[in-house]
Image (cartoon, rainbow over all chains, first blue to last red):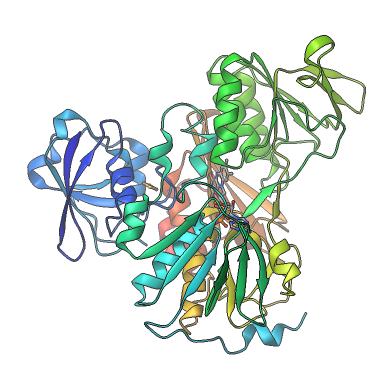
Length: 107
Length: 424
Ligand SMILES: Cc1cc2nc3c(=O)[nH]c(=O)nc-3n(C[C@H](O)[C@H](O)[C@H](O)COP(=O)(O)OP(=O)(O)OC[C@H]3O[C@@H](n4cnc5c(N)ncnc54)[C@H](O)[C@@H]3O)c2cc1C
Ligand code: FES
């Protein structure tokens, strides 16, 4: 299990144990974390699973592929250097303790 | 049909009032439930679904799940605990059998009665059955539910020759997964090209080539006349697919993907206006002011009087949001350009708009590079875009079409023309 802290748009924090191999989107959805819509279910086709990876963790997360970068250009909320699509980040032991913040709007 | 009643006043649910019952615990039913809560409805919300599990994402069934890249738990949209947290009650594994509108009462399959103050129908759709002899043989599957896909995954383990009937999205996505697993795959398509109902020839041709390059045999103009069982002991198991021209295609596993039928019987029996689905307006209202409907089971009446049927996640989500708003007395019309995607091999197709009735098609980019887009025009106006591995074009296209902006066919074809300038 990989501990992930999600900070919801209203500021409240949820710590969730995410099974390795799951995406941060999947765990957030299943646990009812507010602030992720994930219409495409993880296909990198909707850009409604946007999150901001905490600065301290940004460098540890494997880089975004070209498809993801293109979708990130089109997220509803402000795009920042640490913006990622949570469906494209897989939980690995390396990311144990990672913190992600969710934007106020996804669509 | 009396459309004036559709536009008529809805019953307005007050916070605390209820219960609101949602029939169908799929993508759209869940959206109705969650939108009701996020819009401030505090009363009881009951979701009744005939599948024995919480709502799940269907698109990965023919993609990541079948390919073994996602588990069942990963498909779950909301786990039961998350629903409980939002005070959404889920009655799973039981269907709603009838609606008594006069007494605002539902009867469930197990005989239980449920009273409703507001009702949402989100019953989805089912696979269109193949109307030929032998369609009931073992190892012949539709791909609609998690239970279907579980059976298919098990059968695929030992099958070697796979025949897909229908060259639409689901059939082709399945073909891609099976081909990647080294199976011998044949796709039988009755039309003269793939996905003919929804895409232009350049896109059909590209996909025929793509599947061909992965060893999939594509048979166009192939009309299936019968499925044939094995000789000898296992006569009830499929052995071949026969076409009207007398050919036979050997098969250990057959997938039928020839479209879907809306689950509108419940609504029809209750006397709601139905035509190619449960008829709703842009705000998801049915002909009964206490009842809304959303998702695959609906046909949306457009301003010009025509009916639009969409079978997509976006439609399920957007109509679900509208349906919740309507139950709470608010108009939230769904007017955005429809969008859809399909994953086959490493290729992502993203579609936006409705291409039906186009008179001009223009390509941008090169199909050989597996990166191109096709722009559809009618009377010089842009109506739709299909993008292959060009998410940027797709997303810009969504903005463009949502705004009702256009560009000229010449601009669309010119790679130097910045699409974003048309979208602002
Ligand atoms: C394999 C597959 C791949 C897909 N891929 C894509 C894709 O790539 N992109 C895309 O946009 N869309 C895709 N779709 C379509 C998308 O999944 C559907 O449009 C969407 O799920 C529709 O949501 P819905 O809630 O209307 O129906 P559903 O999700 O089908 O849910 C309806 C639910 O209601 C239940 N039900 C029916 N009658 C009753 C009753 N009387 N009582 C209780 N429950 C009842 C059904 O069993 C079902 O669980 C795909 C669909 C499938 C099957
Ligand atoms: S869930 Fe759609 S892009 Fe991540």
